Image: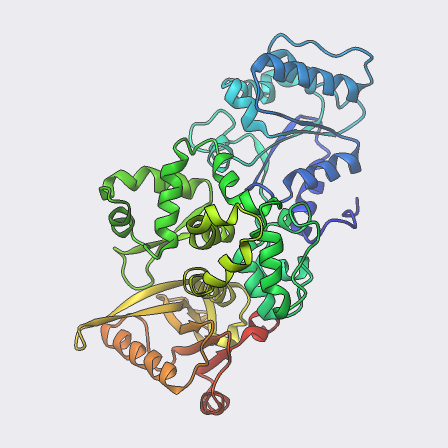
Amino acid sequence: MDKPTEMFDRDFEWAELMRYAGYAGREATLGVVSGRRRQGKTFLLDALTRSTGGFMFTATETTEADALRQFGHALAAHCGESTPFRFAHWDEAITRLMSIATDGPKVAVIDEFPFLAKASPALPSIVQRALDPGARHGNTPVRLLLCGSALSFMGGLLAGNAPLRGRAGLELVVPTLDYRLAARFWEVTDPRTATLTHAIVGGTPAYRREFTQGDTPAGPEDFDDWVVRAVLNPGRPLFREARYLLAEEPELHDTALYHSVLAAVSAGNASRGGIADYLGRKSTDLAHPLHVLEDVGLVRHEPDAFRRNRSAYRIAEPLIAFYHAVMRPHWGDLERPGRAPAVWRRAQSTFRSKVLGPHFEGLCREWARWHAAPETYGGHPSRVAAGTVNDPSARTSHEVDVAVFGQPLDEAESPGRETLLALGEAKWNETMGLPHLERLRHIRDLLTARGTGSSERTRLLCFSGAGFTGDLRALADRDATVQLVDLDRLYGGE
């Protein structure tokens, strides 16, 4: 089946779903589809069932008896029965579901599966039993797909000693759109406007269609007005979305605590100790909430590029970072209509320093890992991270925004230890010049003296949202070890 014309991108996901749906085996099979909310999982699976004539049931948060009643109604309607099926328990319901593929393979989707499993904890075991070889004599070639947004639960379905471990023929995670795809999806052609927009709404497809109804910033001159009318407007869905994201996660029981942790990270506290100090708590008290926030995809835990015993926590969802830095401190004012323009004017400095600056650094790391050509570094990158380099003689330390590790091109046939291919600095609103380059050279010398894989071959990358001085451009034209990355290159170059 061709991908629906209204579906943006998702070529890989659609191809995998069609491959799974078209498997010709005579046995029933299992697939698992997961991903954070608002990424289009239900849209994908609905398109799949419509294209193949399959069955789809979307669960709600309810009791076991009510869920069985809803399921019986939906399955009977799909099978053309005039009266609903009445199932006493999920054994009966799953057994009946596994018998619907009478004319060849048929897709059967259970969306929001975690809601059902919450009310009926034995359900994964029941599905597992239905897929066991001993139970297959009554099965037809149903292509069962379990879908959910509770990442920790869905990840655990196929992990360790879970009942469904080893049963799945498909394990598909639907990701957010990366920043380049997001710009295309929002139809924002100006790279500066695209970066500003992505710093707030990220790559979540629903935020353009359902949440803003296609209202996009027309250009740099319209961006501030767009923020006021689409994001800071108490009459629009995006206004409360950051709060709802936490409330919808079943793993987050004490939302006040999790909001406080996110506020601490948003304020620039990247270590567990710094977060604890910000909240006035012991560091050990935060191990669990930080782990849970990682599991649900709201926080990333990134190791330092140069110090194995150091790492940083960063907010993974741009809208959450924007809410805690800009909206939460002014929530009382923002709830009153007409106050948003004044609040946004006062929050400009905070937005640039707490949201836009860190976000731009993250986009630069993403470009360095996934979009830059190997010739940019003279090698193939294997990991990209930020890090801190000590400078003992000056009794200080230097922050490195982008550190690219990998294998040099001339050593690709004889892999050895990891080499530092490039060091980079990112400045969103600052024209970069020779002093920035000299700082990178000094850091490279420090790392070379430490024997950390750095050498004169290590390239120096300058990322800027504001441009570069003529002297720096002239030097980069003569020296291939100096690479300048502006917004045009970030969005459209190699």
